[in-house]
Image (cartoon, rainbow, N blue to C red; front, side):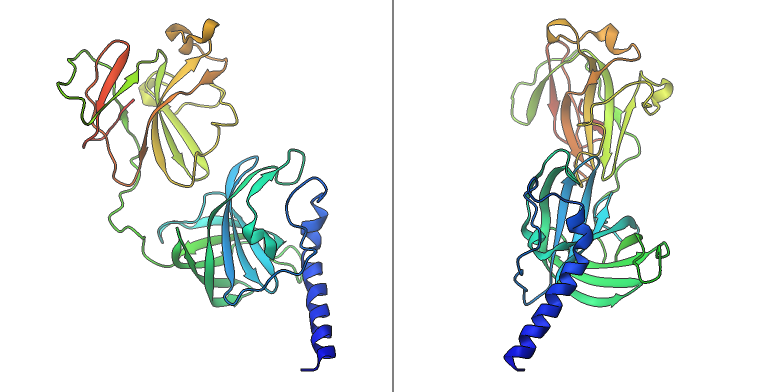
Amino acid sequence: MSPRRANEDAGEGQRARGARLKEYRAKRDFDATSEPSGAKRARKSRSPRFVIHEHSATRLHWDLRLERDGVLASWAVPKGIPEQPKENHLAVWTEDHPLEYVDFNGEIPKGQYGAGTMTIWDSGTYDVLKWEPRKIEVALHGERVDARYALFPISSAPAEGERPKEWMIHRMDPPADAAREPMPEHVKPMLARPGSLPRKDDGWAYEIKWDGVRAIAYSTPGELRLESRFMCRKGGVIAGKEIRLSSVTAGPLSVRPVIIGIDLQRDAAQGRPVFRQAHEQGGHLCLPAHRAQPHDGLRHRGGQREGHGRAAHHGGGHEAGT
């Protein structure tokens, strides 16, 4: 190929990338955000790259980006990348991003599009198994994700020549951990009870006994559910009309499903929780967390001591140590 033809092809490629990044650039003020503008010609890798961003914006979600035709084809995945074939997750096709975004990791300022913290959850290379207008199959090779996934639209294109917005992402391979247990629907909170101190401290942890409403938080990607013995009768789910949670705790805690024992407290004078006020409706309640329990088989059994502290022993059982 002659140098002139090579330059012409490079120019056409640059113009095509510019057209695909038009929507991305229109949504951002690059004098205010540190996100790459895509103005510079990015390095093309030998193998196509992918990145999964954890995006703590208005709502926590994850962004899957695949290097394709000089840009990053991008989907927003509210519930994260599925870990087993029986779980298909919604993936919303968003605007193409510049290739430099594969390394972006930082804070998007308040007032800017997508304001919040953007961190790299996983990255690596991928193999294209199929890339058709209505079906994409790829094999991701990352540190956290190393499996085949399929993406397929569940909506029609808004207009001729445009891409469908709503897709689903499906894991094609078996779960990485075949022995992983599903998260229990309900976990009974442990209650403080009189008892003697253990003779040896090995294997025991001590916690402050807070005065408040004992509750269990079930966090899965895209959802945070609270249950309590007292706020709703018969251990029902705590409804939004009964308590108000700050934005920090109103969403999922991470992409990893986890069960957390908490005490719901009402802020009082001198920062001291008042047991009676915690049971009254309304007001702001804070959530000091006692212990996190990943749902993949890690469980706790508790022996507790009444008073200023509690002792909990890590072992088997199906109670949350709170």
